[in-house]
Image 1 (cartoon, rainbow, N blue to C red):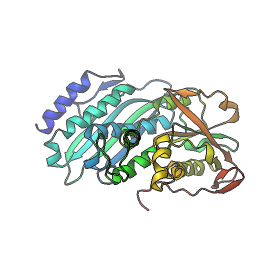
Image 2: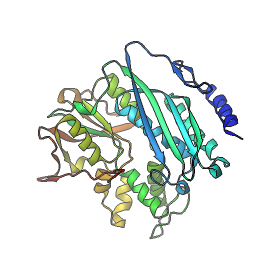
Image 3: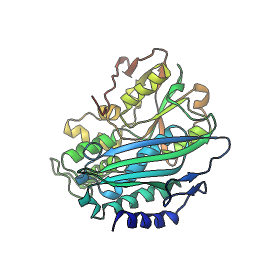
Image 4: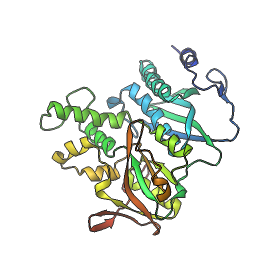
Length: 342
């Protein structure tokens, strides 16, 4: 199958699952055509996934890579409080990968997540790369005019919340690095029990199949609840620092309130890993970190799509000061999350 045959096949797949009538022309033309709704703003994001930097081919099933490629961009749209509408995805594949079923499995996972959130795949591109897989994911969403939630809106006295739990994706990556694989006996010391194996599999999926908090993002945007928001992709400490820098404020967190993934607590204590450190500095949880005024805090729902939130701290009037406290003790919280170029 050459690239044109594959594009034709993909167009047929996408044509039967066109979630948005706003996409007037998609795969098959030189560019997508999307109608604009009156009184709304477009929100657009782009993410690159590079083999051996953002994922490893040997440990990432293609359908989960397709899922993750879309998930990371959906998370950015959610962090703006917007509703995702359509997407574009481009692949650069080595020739030996093209000749396998990788591309079919990739789009299978991608489209399954797109179906879940009503996102239309409107186009993209295919090319041959020399050695490594390259993925470029673009998602566009919309929100009522002037309602996008920026990182720059936090104010002293605002409360700091986060969705879900933290540390699971970072723990999953560490497990992959020591040889753990999905649905296989993980290569970790100690001969894990069945309960341990279930915990390990759960953490692997937190890394390989993240769930973007699209529902929470839409609620935050439509109800105008959050003053500032960011997704936790680089790590809580780093992403909180980004939000505070954009807002010109500081923050103090309560260590006991940080929601650490229960499986991280279960497994990491036995392996000389600090669960709190993974929750604070580990990346790729793709939860939403947001600030809310005291007036709006009472309006927050307890959960959206079954996902709860945790109050973990407050915004201060000390720009650049990030602190964390445990009972009467308080110390600096330097950003220690992921950086592409250190």
